[in-house]
Each structure stands twice: as structure tokens, then as C-alpha cells.
Image (cartoon, rainbow, N blue to C red):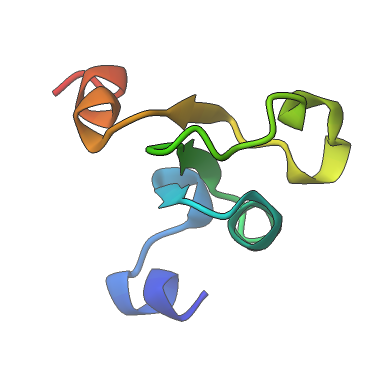
Length: 72
């Protein structure tokens, strides 16, 4: 929330990228952000979409993939 305030942005204007589903997803979702998880080492539980409260909006393998996703 502090970063959003400093940047004078709203959560819906930001994409949060994390690497820990149980920590990163709930906080970012609570701030209204879209959330992506970077899964560099295939460590994300393949059944993650079964977890209602900690479901990321997308999972990527590298930051290069993020650039493609947002159209850069």
C-alpha cells in the first residue's frame, strides 16, 4: 500500500509479480492488484488454481514472458 501511495497509483493500475504464492498473492489481491507468480524453478504447486484465496492471475517462467503478456 505504501508503494502505491508513493507512486500515486491504484491497485488496479499495477501488476504485482511475486515468487511465493502464499505470501505474495493474498497481500497484492487485498490491495486490488493483478498478481503474477514467477515460477523459475517449477516450485509452484500444480494444483494452485484449486486454492480460491491464493490464486494468482497468471504464472510465468521468466520476466521475458511478462513483457510478452503485457504487450511490450
